Length: 130
Image (cartoon, rainbow, N blue to C red; front, side, top):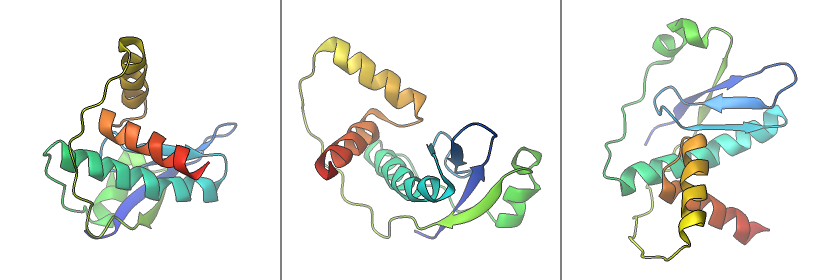
């Protein structure tokens, strides 16, 4: 897959937010511009992984001119994020979680614009690094 356009949004007093015009709901943020840039790569990979697992088609990349012509992107700075070259094959697993924990996972995933699978994959990756 080709590089993907990401938009970084700087709001005074808040973390730097990153969104992807071609992937609605794929968002992340960082306390610094560098942290936001690094998290963007992870967020995009997880989002694409979730889309593939859910059987969704990946969008064709939008031209930069078209993205920046949108008034909503006027105050953003565009940069490219490398999308995974060959997304890993998704494997279905069966897990058991307490109902209240699953509800919290689903709420957190929705708030972050992720699928349940993408959210759990991100949490697992972060736990393995710590």
